[in-house]
Length: 70
Image 1: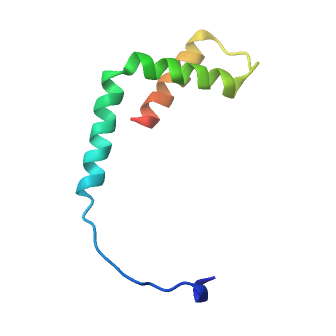
Image 2 (image 1 turned 30 degrees about the vertical axis):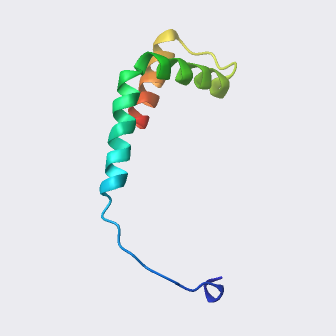
């Protein structure tokens, strides 16, 4: 595989723009927490299907999902 690749150009990027993008993502996510949580709930329902869980377990899993995206 490597024998078929060559480097045509190389430049260094310090990550500033990426950091700004991620910070903007988090600000928007926090500002729209209720809407994001509704999306997470829908996706959670698709993922777990008919698995029997208590409301507390579902809430914990949902909060865990939020933290992973944060």
